[in-house]
Image (cartoon, rainbow, N blue to C red):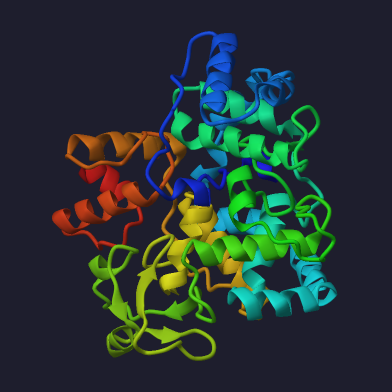
Length: 393
């Protein structure tokens, strides 16, 4: 599963400004490794320890291939969520909720993170621990640190792995995980493990690969440190009126729950949370598809993973695990193909919008640009790209 999911890039150690001592990327990998060792010496690490740590480091072409292969995120929400949320995954999730009930009780008490949230991550990241990745972690981190796309994200993780090695908690030759360097059942980067790792079973170790209590509590601690608000909801399906001002939907537009109620938004099941909470209405496939209200905790999901469709699906699955019904799919307008999306992104760029990379993926920047152009052209501004918008541009 993890092989086609975006990495949880935002380690707690990276939430502050970029670390000093960034080693120049590119060039000879051997020279780069030598420079990384020199930087580690400058940081006070023992040279003999560094020789052992870096001895097996190799550049990994499979890591680079995985980093560039993110086509799964071109799928729209309904397709993507149906692919990830199988009956088997749902049933095993419910079984694990019962099996580890005491762990989840502790998680909710100590960290304020609802049990469905971590269970959903556990499912999507490693299929409940079954597939944790077979990439050599040090090789992946060194490869991505040497690559010039995002060295500022990965070089600190090499030094974090070094710190784990010095504590006896990391083997550079044999430690494996996801292609982006994440380790264990909920896929945490070395820096995250240092900052948020929890010894859940009291054996004196933080073992995220083999101990569910360690993995789940560590993940919850990380979410708490990233800003999760204890005891508050994150996502809820809603029914929206047909005359809603669509330009006010989307993550960049917030109103109080009470204000949304006054506009005719109603919960599809149960009741809304605190009427004073700020929230956004999200239409992942436009006004004719499923509709959700996103509470403040929803934004924390983007600290775990930066893909909109992944975040929506993980947040929705968490609600399903806690009893929410299958969403009302509605009558969807057809999705654009990957090539059509790239053409649309190119046109949006020509109209002055920042959509990031032209990759055929409907991410947050592209959604905002789509909504702005829909409003300008007099189309329903629900942020869902259609053939009509593409033609109008």
